[in-house]
Length: 111
Image (cartoon, rainbow, N blue to C red; front, side, top):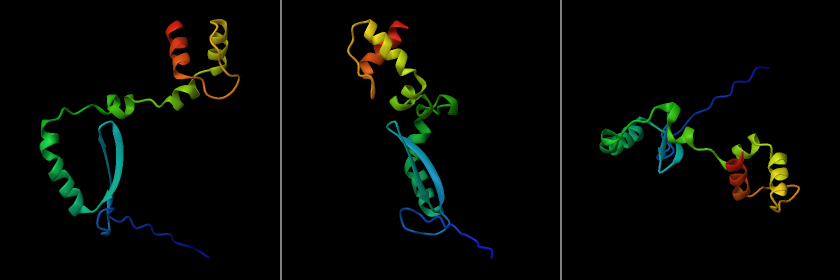
C-alpha cells in the first residue's frame, strides 16, 4: 500500500496557504518565518528604507557565520588539556563538567 504525505506551509501571520520560508537577522539574532506573498511583500516594504541604507555583508563573513556559540567552541577544544594546563597553573578545575570561560580564555591566551 502506497502512502502520500503532503505538507502545506501556511503563513505564520494570517494562516494563508502556499507560504515560503523567509530568513532574516536582527540585532545579532537569526529568525525564520513562513510568509505568503502578501505578508512577504509587506515585510519587504517595511524593511526597504533600512535595506536601502544598509551595507550588505557577504555571506561568508556575515554576522551569523562569525558568531560562535560557547558550546561549539568547547566541543572542538580538548578540555582534558585545558584542565591539565589549569592545574599546572594552580587554577582549580573540576574533573568533569563545564570549564569556566575565564579558564578557557587564560588557556587560549597562554597557548
